[in-house]
Image 1 (cartoon, helix red, strand yellow):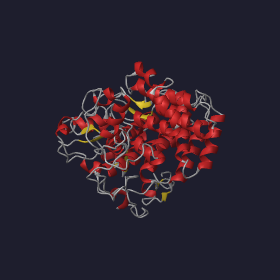
Image 2 (cartoon, one colour; image 1 turned 90 degrees about the horizontal axis):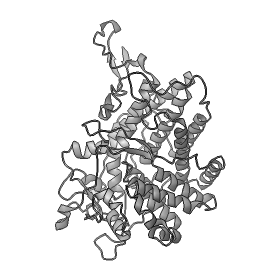
Image 3 (cartoon, helix red, strand yellow; image 1 turned 60 degrees about the vertical axis):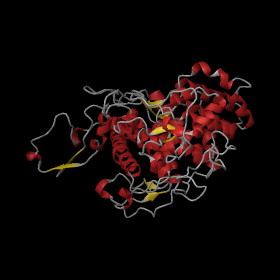
Image 4 (cartoon, helix red, strand yellow; image 1 turned 180 degrees about the vertical axis):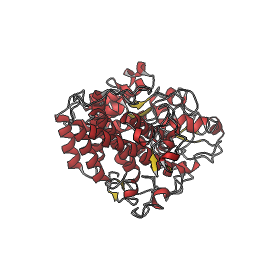
Length: 503
């Protein structure tokens, strides 16, 4: 029997991902007369073909299922009262058999991590260090998402195929330490070596869909990802976080971290080649009506006159639904503003704004806070620019303006809140969910958003929640696809239990 790895014929065709690393079998080689020259076999694989397949796997799930779930759990938008698609998300009722759970896990492992590991192994043997760095960073980024969702995952024994069908689950902190070490190893390679090959392959578009092979930007992505990983540790391992960040900045300058988005952008307004969230939520469902403005976000934007409301909801002031009130009969719910999505929207891994906010938090916590406000202002400015509101920046961050005053009153809360406000751009909403679980910001409201004492922007629990009073989700439960097949899988952990770095 002979195995094959199948690849995309065009790397812009996003939703053929299930064929990327599928293992097919054929009988004897001499009977395999239907070989398609456009679909390379295992022996024809190359790092230039496999890297974009992995990048698209991460893009598809981060920018599709997880963006929608993260957007609802981060209370940017809520299930429409005149539609039904995501009621279980808004009710905090995601089960071990649900598609969002199983599909995200399966694709990120089989089509993401497996492809990245192939590139890492092949490029290492070839001393092709550019591809080695790119695959290492993407594997670390994608693994981090899985850890942040599930806490413990197969790692040290994973990706061995039939050699180990029951890989052990490693704890999240140990995995994070290994990821940082792997990034450091990749950054230490010689990127001027003659063994590095060009980033393009005849007949294919540029094989790196994130930066087009710009290794200087990949180094910035690597360092920014390390910074994010260290900040994840501030609750559980504060001394490790402090030492890591101080060391990172000691060897750094302003050019070390991202000042542009790490993202995939080559989407077009064509079925199966468009933004994955748009494809999944609008084109496939044949309706734009499911995701409507949440009072949680809309009330914050209205309180401060934040002009990003136009980008998010197509209106200067959003008509919104109270989070999770999808069975409500309030007349205005029927005309609540829809979350704005476009087929050509990017999928962002780490944005330029997020990079600045990460640096600001690090400086505030561990580096004397000498540059924290400046970096905070940079983050706010980049977020407004991404929303097409560059002309409004001074109205919010100059001395005495709203977001300047909020920083003065509570610097850390201001940094995290502004980061939360930036994530709806680029299908990056799941990061808002992670950051709230790490920091507690935005804070939880003691009352529902219909109460006159409700404070704009505070999180609420909807009337249809299936969880015990006062509880929010803090993870996904282990998917049935894994627990039913892997005898090493741990017992199910409640959705309300924090992952290793959470509050």
